[in-house]
Length: 219
Image 1 (tube, rainbow, N blue to C red):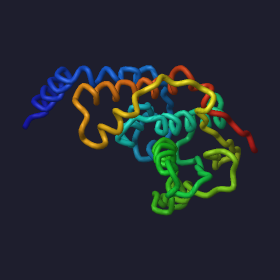
Image 2 (image 1 turned 180 degrees about the horizontal axis):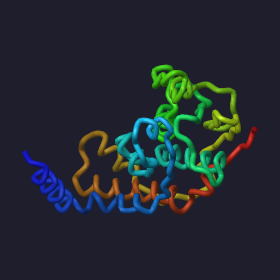
Image 3 (image 1 turned 90 degrees about the vertical axis):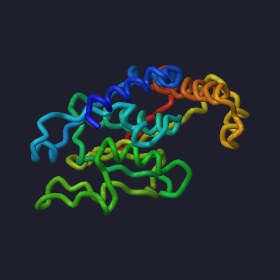
Image 4 (image 1 turned 30 degrees about the horizontal axis):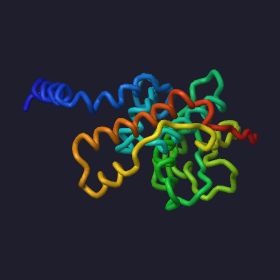
């Protein structure tokens, strides 16, 4: 099958499912972040990397308040650490307060790792002591925030907390979620639930982004 045929099929699929794509139109309005990657530059990738919320949705396989929070925390921490500089992917340590198996910790870690390049011991080992990515992601750190980000070059660090308790999101019918999980919801009910769910995510990312993430500076 030639590439033009694939593109045509994708275009038709989108046209036939417009109601589903309308739920995520807001993705294009969410702040993006640009990082430079010295390893990429060294190996001939002659451009910086732009990361979007849609990228982390693809990584996670879904869009939810936790994915949104992980994205916002990572962006806010990097902006604080690097000010007017471009953050350097691969030179950022990421630590999480909770254990790897606890709650949504894995979701937070996956998003932060994707953007910063930080990995556990299975990460890239580097080239002659340079450009390593392994051992930059840790769990069960003795911190107050949900995550701590540290610049490897100067050891400046910042903790971030994600808290939705002081905002009011649009409601949704929880019974529709249960019906969907039980496989008894109608197509219309699933569409109603999905639209309401994504409206809440959009509010976090656009309306309340400056309220839901707090910084703890601890250089």
